Amino acid sequence: MLNTITNVKIILKGVGFPEFSGTCTYIKTLNHNILVDTGSFEHRGQLLENLNKLDLNPCDIDAVILTHMHIDHFSNLSMFENAKIYTTKAELKAYENVVLMKKKYTETDAMDEVFNDSNWKKFYNSGFMDSQKKKIYQSIAPLSQKQYDNIVFIDDVEKLFDTLEFIQFYGHSDDPRGVRINYGCRSIVICGDAVTNKRWFDRVIGQGDLPKGDYKDIVRNITIASEKTNVIIPGHGLPFDLKTNEYDKSFLL
Ligand SMILES: [Zn+2]
Image (cartoon, rainbow, N blue to C red; front, side, top):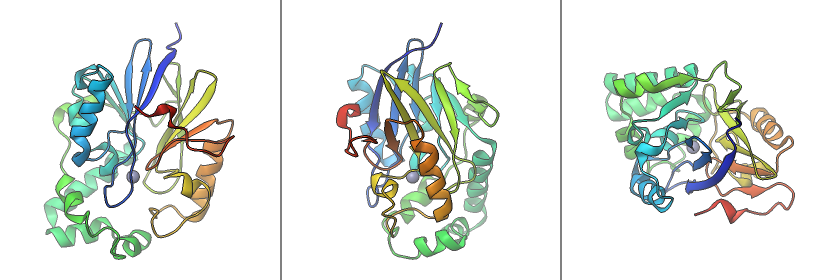
């Protein structure tokens, strides 16, 4: 039987600096409770509160799909003990390297190493992240054995529960994925930071947007995300409708 999707809600609104959290999207199917990303650690209380509004406990979530393993997207993973964790091998490896940096270096040196990439460095040193540096550093922690046991690699998987299709994106992190779902009559793409927000989608790309992926990757991701799509749920902004070019607040709690 097809696992029809019966509800889609944004349970954590993705926000940019200085609040800084990735969007967390809840998808209910006939047999599963799924989250795409889990937001940043400092939004944990809000995440729990919003799950409760949907009559859900963290233990009800049986799958967490990670668009990528940046701390603003997966830091609340440990809340969901019963969930299988879907990520890619390269994303996990990249995060493990970040954990190693923390063990090896002092705070300043570790952060310099983590962001030791020409694009990131420029952004990192721009002052834009100053309010977040300490929080980012503190959020870096090894995954628990239980989390490792729950990991399913999605490198070679196209679909999940018949109804969710994984999408390959490019840039920003090592091997990011998005999710396409059909809900009602609409095709929705949950992008992670492949499409950070509507501004980004509209190609108003400036200092406030995260680098690493070059402009070519960004345009490529926008093209992939838009194909036969009605609604985009970005990594750090409200969902928007591609036909009306307006924000779609129907997914908010
Ligand atoms: Zn992000």
